[in-house]
Image 1 (cartoon, rainbow, N blue to C red):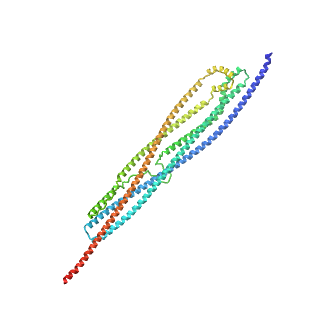
Image 2 (tube, rainbow, N blue to C red):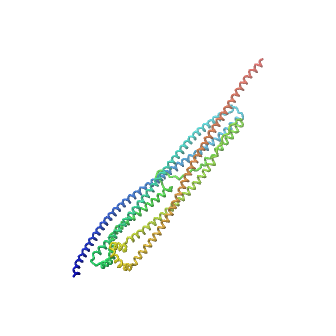
Image 3 (cartoon, one colour):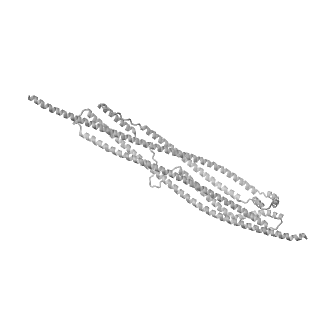
Length: 569
């Protein structure tokens, strides 16, 4: 009787417990659904922000590419202007050399005329025998030479002013080049910042994927909990039913995971877009690096209206040789010494001119050797750039393969692990049921190990080994790329040093040309002084002849009347 009384009370308590469990499970399911909707909205906002940020990055990359194109065009213009200025200076130099040749020939003619006049003076010719036509011709040539000299001096002044202007223009061009290099460094820093931002976006994407996986697992656990709570069985039967329904819940969870395939497809699309952006940024950095090395193709047609000219290097003009000037000066010195020795006039010897030919030849040889070294370094820089581009292409291919493997691994890792689900479910239950369930499930868990699970584990191990191998290869390629970049930087440094030394030698060459012009001026002044001295001597001799003739005529006149007076006496 006692047993029959307690039976309806126990059944009522059991019914109350079952209703409470169902209400709790329904409440948990509602909370999980709300969390799922909140996470979906958060994912939608993150996708919108990511798309807007991608559009901004694309526009920024286009703007940077336009800026680089403009900088390259301005660099080409400055180089063409330099080439034109150098060509004009070389033409001026050639014209001055021709004019110097003409002046030396005219000097020789004047020396010949001076020698003929000196011979006439030595022979003791009277001024009556001097031809006035010859004197007029001589004076006319002297006037022509003076006019020619003034023209040459004016041309020299213009040339020096043009050289100074060219020097200032070259300094301005160097300043502009420095500014452009600074802008390129700023652009590279901006690209680096954008890469950092892309990495942050990837991290946020990974966190959202992790949250989605946790949400799926929680939904699966809630489904398992509701399916087991609905059964009105004893504890032992309930546990047996839970173990039998575990596989059914797993399959149902796999079916429900099909609803999240859309989210997974969206995530894959985002990953593909991020990969394309990374490739664009790598291309941009490669262009910046090739642009930073200064490798410009002269065969590329220029967009500006300036005509393309090849780079004309400084060269020592064969028409301008200081030996001719020094030889003429030595001839004039010898002629003066002969004249002074005959006239018994001692003049102080002129100061000898320094020998500039050896210095000019040394400068020319040094410049040619530096140009050869510069071309050699340029070829090495080109080879390094080609090697870097090849290695970057290999790295891109390896990155694509690694991304494919990562996608496969993520897909396999996203598959729900039944052991993990079972552990989470058992943690939610109390310890007594956990012990019983472990005893009951130890045998089927060991017997239910299928060859599919073993194949999955072996595939995972193979994929992980392949990933490690690829990572090692990538690290090796990165090291090689860093070494090549270091070599390229050292070659660029050597090239800049060679250019600086070449500019210094060009300045020394310009200084030597200025010294040559100063020596030419000194020789011209010396020749003018010689002409003036010869003119003064010639005039003095003419005056002496005139005075002597007058004295002789007076003596004859005085002697004639005396003779007549004596005869008359």
